[in-house]
Image 1 (cartoon, rainbow, N blue to C red):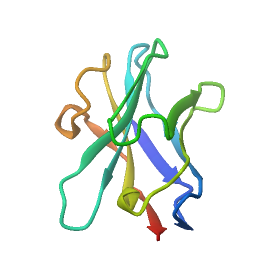
Image 2: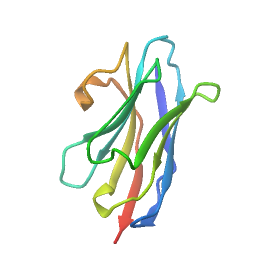
Image 3: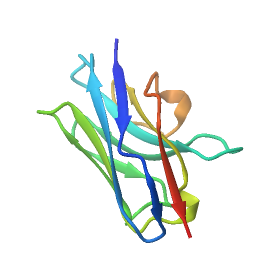
Length: 123
């Protein structure tokens, strides 16, 4: 069973940076896709970024050029580096996993989820 634990959320001012981490355990498939999603109050959960087992990445248009997804396989950790943060980036950020590969960045396609970490960006 895949277990995902996020950390790194905080309150920051607009223009600031944060790095989120997701500790991954129980992911035994050699082919997988890891993603970051976020959900603001009163809004649907939306995809932010994803990375496949081959290292290929994909981003939502709203974060391209500002966010970077990466993974450290030796540490079994997924990261999301967030720069130039905006108030509209505020929300609960979730780490998620699916197999066997990345496809559309949609929450319904991911079967394993973490509990989330809160990011608040003030203007």
